[in-house]
Amino acid sequence: MAPKRTKNKAPSADPQGMFAGMVVFLIENSVQSRRLQIWKQKLEQMGAKIETHLSKKVSHVFAMSSDALFHHVDKDQLARFKGVGTPTSSLPYSPPDLNKDITEIFGKLINIYRALGDDRRSFSYYKAIAVVEKLPFKIESADQVKNLPGIGKSLQDHIQEIVTTGKLSKLEHFETDEKVRTISLFGEVWGIGPATALKFYEKGHRALDDLKSDNSLTNVQKLGLKYFDDIKTRIPRNEVQEMESLLQKVAEDIVSGVVVVCGGSYRRGKASCGDLDIIITHPDGKSHKGFLQKYVKRLKEMKLLREDLIFSTHSEEGTDQGVDTYFGLCTYPGRELRHRIDFKVYPRDIYAFGLIAWTGNDVLNRRLRLLAESKGYRLDDTGLFPATHGSGSKRGARGTTSLKLETEKEVFDFLGFPWLETYERNL
Image (cartoon, rainbow, N blue to C red; front, side, top):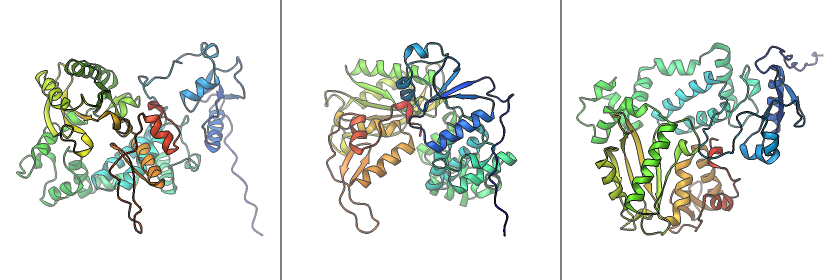
């Protein structure tokens, strides 16, 4: 008879651990039971004590979101804790990110798979980072994450290899494979997609300098190449905030009452941004028409906008749902460093859809689109449209008229998706 398997005992608590002296109260709302169990186990192993109620002994309160925190703890109780404030969209999103060894490697794999045109694999690492960076403990074994969402068997194996060896053989293979390394590098140039990157590789190009002499480059690709290092430089949150204020003031000088919001990672509270996503509308439903041309002209006169990448207008003709688009390069006042900037001008009646799409993140947008499809609709940045029934595995065609939903919350509610404040959308 085979001997009975014995369960591995959890490591004993370390009285000198990194959380020694902490007395923690955990707010359990919106936390999956398995995740809560892992939090408690790791906190105790690292020296913390867990309280079952908010006593005077408690030194730290952990909650899944600010809403959960402020729902269970009143202002008088919070007053004795440091670093607590009212949640607003201007607060920076600062996950613990105690596992940068893992998230940095996964981030490199995202860029490689995007350059190779493998969006499915790229997206899986993107989802995993959002989960791992929020963990309040340092991962020591893949067993600690095997029941977390978005962390399948393959990713668990990657995590185990990283925590054991400090590296990942898959990434090392990619970085030493000339073809993969070259296509990945070319794919980071704005305007060069996977197919074009492969063509450049097949022409014999191996470095960015090789591309400069290729006469097939479009003007957009030449700009992407010229400002390659600038575009890759992230923008500090305080500078984005200053630029948003400046953009709002210039817009108001052109058309009174215009609404200008900086979306993307800035609106989600991130500490830095890769670019600026500006979403614009006007409450009267008509003054947005023709606004973008005037706005771009004024911003160029101020030398805030420097180079054009894409410029298309539809509001006055009523085509493409009446959405105007500008993609370009901008500079922070007093500097020459180029940053990517996008403007999207929406009619007021579809503005909520534009806000959702251009705030993100990608995980949330994908979940909302799939949920819409499951209910017989097609969701994009211009509306929520009834869809026809597709044949076989094909998606149904999109209807021509969107449902009338005025706010982001109305869209969430209609789809039956729990409401998320902007700072909660880093899924």
